[in-house]
Length: 220
Image: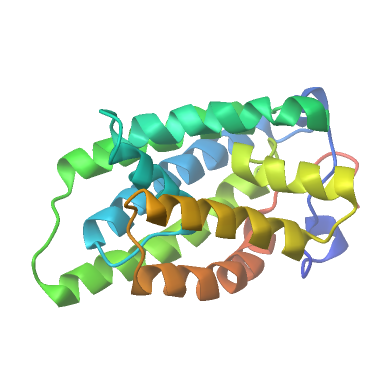
């Protein structure tokens, strides 16, 4: 995801992992990164407990839990590192944010699932689903805007775009349809929440990302 609507001073900087650490505003950016990742994991837990459908990657993660004796968060972490292996032929280096993403969101998702019960009332499940989508967008804007590197799954997309020359839309759609179909076949949850997420996450992040993108040293 990129801040295509942002002013030039609020665009994401194409910097390597060492430059990310030397780019200034380190305390603020680290706080924003980890608050964002924590909220992201919590949003995943809320959508699961809402039980009205999940985003494509989480359909895939839940599908795996149907066949392996692993918690949802453990699967999220494991798949993150499997996806990172695909970065090797793409010649990408993970940043602090990439590695933190691979671990933190899975831990927080499991903590959320352990502490937040699944409601019976439909209206409350709808609240959980909608809150999960909005918090997910806010969290994504925060951790991406901290400029410590993309998460494993976003990095896979951007790496494939760079190496293949295909459009972001085509690569992202292909990846998400693949994991969605695979997850559904394994028993993952698809529903109205899946549609709401697909239609709203792009516009929400498009609006929020410029607000949370930290201006780095050397940026006008």
